[in-house]
Image 1 (cartoon, rainbow, N blue to C red):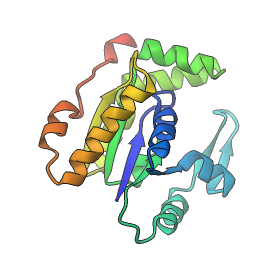
Image 2: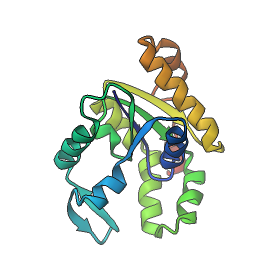
Image 3: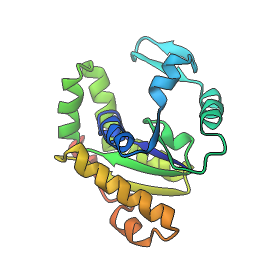
Length: 181
């Protein structure tokens, strides 16, 4: 089973995935995979990023996962384009701004990502693309606490009855659109 851990850059995906790895989960860090295996169609110098070739990324992820029935976590702001079940990490724009600035993102890249978070871009895409979507707020929280929420969701999904976790982590729970306007 492939579960995507997605969200706007800076919401805590990789930090949470490192803890999941330490707890024995298999994690594919898609952004690293895309860059190391050149699974992109172009380099966007203006936005300081690569444009992933999602067909090639999908094929490679399928090769890596194979017939493995264990849980594999995809770590990427694009994971929802591959996984049927996704957990979207969310962060209040004011905190996200600080996190991205701490990474030395350019002002335009900070603005682009904060706007995406305010407008629920990753969440909306996830709901459109995926069968099951859960949403977790990471604002003001340690990665270890968020990871516990993620494991709770995974356990609910694997149990076959995710009713309780869905109610607690249903998509659309957070609205930061007013922070941008």
